[in-house]
Structure formats: structure tokens, C-alpha cells
Length: 430
Ligand code: UD1
Image (cartoon, rainbow, N blue to C red):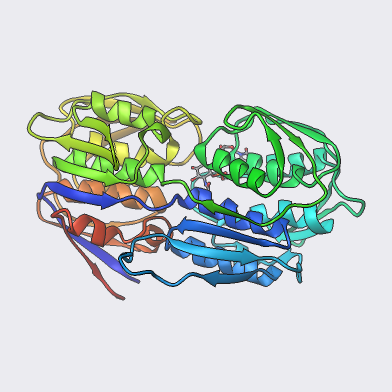
């Protein structure tokens, strides 16, 4: 397994291109199952989760064409992928394929919407809490699907097709909203999705579905109204920039000091996190071409945060922000309200000298004068990158083991950081 070695202490200066959002690319790719025409997606990041999902989609009969690189495009320019599900050849997504990535469970919605049946293994993914699928199944049932669990698989049937209905989510769920949307667009009649997630990636999916011929009102709000249509067509859609990658590099710069343009980033996708970073002492400005983040001189101020659904502070930036707070001039509290058990980075940050006390869903982070390099272990996607941020500011060398988690969600991480002056290298195997 690869490891990443980081020698801390350098400030970051330069330009970091922001990739297309993983969490938008995945549901958009899945939406290709809804039509027999071609869905072309541009700005798709080169990530192992994208590769894994491509494999799952091929199993259902989706043909994939990846456009070659053009002159002037760098390795980090997102790829353009054309997906065509002319015929669904298999409505079954087996354990071997689904177990590594939770989002792949979402294929259940377009499969049942288009063919009236689906058999999908219960999901895997990051080990951050129990992460059930009860609300996704509830949404499908509200549209008339019959659901059974057989041998670890969810079997969904709607032999006469799905019918519009009212789906009221008791809590905000991104995956639940993606599922409800993809099921409702081909259902007969009107569907109301109440307390829908408003995350930009949900909105991106909704906009793409509209280009494919879907009728959706209330996009960007928590009440979506979908009027089913008989069929959807092909479309061309560009994946929006990754707000979590943006926030992660912004926190890295706030941690090390320096001046970096996050090229292609959109500040409006992460107002809350950027506001928090400003409070911590970083300068954040939106400019043509992206978002600039600076911290020159001045310390890191402690700031309290609570994770919330969009537009609140995202849970996917909680670990990275905690890494930043380990060097703050005082104590901060970080409350995690979305996932229980999403504090696995705490013990690894402690190996670098961080002082963090856990109390239920709250972490009390007491800033320390210095962090020191050590061997650490990546435990999940966002936790791994929090270790990268801490290592960039630690004295000496940190070795991060099990970096396959990083490859799931961060495109060309070492290249992007080294070009801005960080000492980062990947050590293959071992
Ligand atoms: C998505 C993101 C993930 C992010 C999360 C919250 C992708 C690929 N992943 O995950 O990076 O951290 O949103 O912003 O886009 N829940 C239930 N029952 C369900 C479904 C969810 O109780 O059936 C709960 C979850 O346990 C969690 C909360 O709802 O406590 C939110 O989860 P959800 O928004 O569904 O997360 P994902 O879609 O899995």
C-alpha cells in the first residue's frame, strides 16, 4: 500500500487548480442509467471512486467513452466521459462491486425507475457511523416500490412502474434526495420531496436532469416538485467545482501561511466554511479565476463550529478544520451533528502532538505551539486529508499510511501541493 511522506514547515504559495466535485460526478454518472441516449459529462475528476463506479455502470450495460486529452490540457484537467445506457443488461449490483463505495447504492433508483426492478447489495464506504439506507428505501416505497432484503441485497420491484407521491424526509439526506429525484423523474404523476437536501451537488444533479428533459421545480430549495415524464434524453453537463477540495486547500494555506489562488473554485459553494476561515485569521477573497486565500504573519484564532446540512459548515470539512485548530492560539469546540463516530482522526492527530478532548459529539481542541512529525494512519477520506494538513505544519517528517482513502477523493494531491512549495512525496508499496 502506498504511503505519503510530508516534511512540514514550508508555506504554500502559487496556484492550485480545483477539480470537478466527486460528490456531484458520482450521482451524475449514475443518472446516465435513466436514458438510452448519451449523457456527456465534462470536468469529471480522475479518482478511484469514479473508476469504481464506472465498473459498476458497465456491469449494468453502460458504454463509456473517455475523450482524449487535448493540447494544453494538464493531467489535472477533468476528463470528459460519454455514458450510454442503450440497454440495461443487468439490474443487479453485487456486493463485490458495491461494497467499497456507498454512493454506488444510488443506482437502485434509476434501475427501478427505468426497468421496474433492481437488486443492489447493501453499501460499504467510509466507516463513519452506521450510515443506514432506511430513508432511501422509504423514498422508493413512497413511489410505489416494493422492497425486500434478501441475502444482504435490497430487492426493489415496481412491475407497473413508479407512481408520484409525497416524500417527507425526517432528516436531511443527500443520498436520499439523489435517490428520490432519480426515481421521481420517470414516475407517473407528481412527486413532492419535502426537507430535501440543498447541497450544491444535489442542485447540480437536478440541473442535469432538467437538461435531460426532467420537470423539476424548486431546485436549490428544500421542497422539490417533480412531474414525471415518459422518457429522458441525452445531454451535456459540466460537473461543478469541488467545494470540499476547495475548503481543504484553503485550510491547508490557513495552516501553513502563504498565498494561493484556488483556480476555478466558487466561493458561493462554501460561504460558511470560508467565513469560518476568515474568523480564524485567514484572508479570503473571490476573484476572477477563483478564490484566493492568504495568511501572512498573524496567528490562527480559535473558532467554534457546528457541522450542519448545506448551507451550514459541511461535515466533510470538519476533520480538516480540526487539524487547523490544533495550532490555534486558544481552545475551540467542534460539534459534529451529521455523523456519529466521525472523530477517528482525533487519535491520529494526537500522534502529532495535538491536544483534543472528546465529549460525545463535541471535540475540544486546545491549540498547541508545535506539532511534531510521526507515523499516522489514514482512516477515512476526509480524516486522511486532515492528517496531510497537520503534517504540512508539523516539525520533521510525517508518514501517512493507507493513503488509498486519499485517492478516492483528492485528485493529484501531491502534485498540487508540491507545486506550491510543500515537501510531499508518495512512496509506492510497502
Ligand atoms: C453524502 C456525501 C458525504 C457527506 C454527506 C453529508 C456523497 C457521495 N457523499 O453522503 O461525503 O458527508 O452526504 O453531507 O455525496 N441517514 C439515515 N438514513 C438514510 C440515509 C441517511 O439515517 O437512509 C443519515 C446518515 O446516517 C447521516 C445523515 O442522514 O446521519 C446524512 O447522511 P446523507 O446526507 O445521506 O449522507 P450520504 O448521502 O451518504
